[in-house]
Image (cartoon, rainbow, N blue to C red; front, side):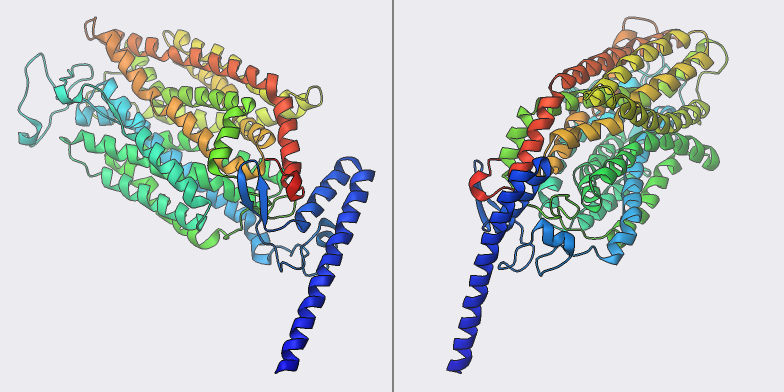
Length: 595
């Protein structure tokens, strides 16, 4: 027994000496590589430095841990990983992961489509909801922003009917005859969507960095699917429950905005990752357009708008199951080009401070909020605005019995789907062409697209007074230019934010875009519309004009977003260079890491 212990100790000592010798050889090789080879030499030296680093690395943000990549005594190097030799070499990806990456990205993108399909299905049946619950524009806008509405009760010619709880069959009142009664306790709307998103986003971000991400995603989808399906059975007298249920959809969006992009980032390398993230974000206009089409088509086929709210939950349950069983459980940093593993992790507070100091990230996030503001407001109100325009032009009747405005929602949804695809392709192509001429191509292309879009959005309200076809043409061009920046914005984030902060950056940017954008813009437009109509007599003409005047806020916000992209262009090169420098520091020896 003593001989075995001695042999074991001797073997252990020999292994430690051999490991120490190997570390010294790698340090010398790294120094030679750094001295002879520019960027490649520096990258090889920094990677070798991480291989020789201890498990505990001291940074300016405190102590960070390096994720283990194998036996501690045999750390890997880029050379050994490339050769596929040695116990510390990077192991090849499992066959199942290689075959299933495309399918996993498709499933995750499908889930994002369903998130937006569910939200904009409500816009496709908005007139029917207003007729059913007896709410005006302000209350209807809450369905998208998620606030608790004022206590609304229909009044016809100044005479109040019986309380809703005592009426068995509620009559359908003609559009424009509803009056709003404000309960003293409901003076201000309570932003349920904003609050639910604010609470859910950091929770999902925290859980996504520590637990099984695909399980969290599936649970989030199952939750909002159940809430949406239940909302289709809400009785007429409980409109506030419908608003509350729509606000809870923010939980599902929070799970996707914080977790799904990080999974895609771990499935693909840098070049392919940008493409797949572009496809993922293309789901925003695609899902929005399909929402209008689904809402209009299902209510016509079933003869009841409630069935429109039961389609996305069924698809959501299926997608959640597919994510749970078909999306691979990838390790964080799996596809990182610096070694396929997380090199260093700073604290969440330090990450937030670094992002706030990143000027390109801040300005591009504000610009994204402007895009979200416009798409949320236009997506909610344009179908209703065009229907009112046709009523004024005597080409359509005032909506008194559902279904209402199905044709406008269907056409607008089809335009949104096509322009979403065309915008992403056009923006990516224009950016590639401009990169040959300027290094600031990404933010400049976004700025030009935003400013051009503002012009055509203004023309919508000019053309709608006399020509619905002309209004649709302006919508087509304006949305194409507006959607051209989705993929480019994701690329800007990848360029100016280091890999270990990208998940937090995506979550914060998504949170900001919803908070300052589509979470409140539909309600704000509805509020302004009702405010303008308060000083006038209700008529089809003023219903059309008041909503048009309120929607004129959108092009001004879009112009502001273009200014933010121009500001991004001023700092883009310096912030990108700083991010590249920080990436190199992440893989340097402990004494040199300054993240």
